[in-house]
Length: 310
Image (cartoon, rainbow, N blue to C red; front, side, top):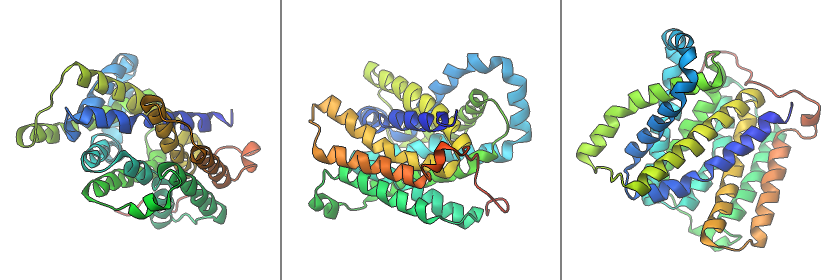
């Protein structure tokens, strides 16, 4: 099914669109590293029964492929989301949403720098079109809001999260040939292990979490929705459509986040919402090389001439 990877990427974007809202709500009670660590701990507990019969295969992969699994976990698990949650403490969700749209550009640039992949003209044009659509949605069609955007400390933390995710996307095709859920288990276990010292240090030297019923519910929603559901959908789509194409679909995340904000806050659909979504969709199709997508098989990975630098 040629469209299945792209449907999965859209589903991932929709799930991730809930993360800024939930992160902002839960972040009042739970500090960023602890929040990130707890969400992956919940994911680890949730999927363990489903991969128990694959434990020998998982153990063999951890033993044989730890050199790629450790960097993937360090990029995409606790550290990446902790950077985003840290950013949300001092910057707006609008800024974080806009910075998410830098990921496809980062994938292009990092792919060219470290994977010797040329940037096609139609890909650049499609990403620019999608960025224009995202900007219309995020800034509500207001030039004044565009001019008022500034990068503060929170923006820099959030941008660090986008950079780590772009690197993860480029490295994902190199992962060991595990079933998807078993791979997520490996990532969760390594992420929880790597993040535990940082979470303990945060609780000791910064602030301790207030794990009331609302915070626990929020953590569960983050874990099972954008974390587990989004990771499974994105991994499935990225491996079959290729990291560049997967990155283009990240443009849909701010659109879904805006729709969620309208539903929660009772905002009305405006013309700029519709205009922005049309541009996001048109840009994604352009970057994908539509209509060749209708007749060509999805590409699994970037063409490479060697391993990444470093």
